Length: 114
Image (cartoon, rainbow, N blue to C red; front, side):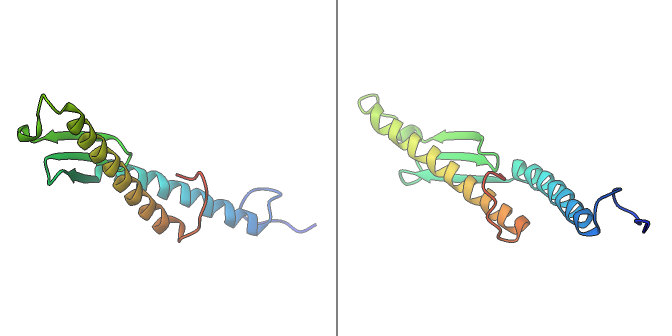
């Protein structure tokens, strides 16, 4: 009976290497997620009258509204501007996270990974 060196008992070498790669990818993902928390995107609409800042975790960090766009007679327009800016900021944050994930996975499409 041949004696197996290193790795996990009863696990072939290829499986051991694959497990190590998965563990490395997991560590890299944790690092990437921490980096995304620190990165920010900004979206502005209405010629810059409404600005929204989000982080890579898709959390809204701030909303800035130019007082000139605040019209008590047209609250609906302001609501639309805020909604548009928030959606654009979240789209940019998603795009940033997807780009980072693509770098990590080498372009592999792994559904539900992030």
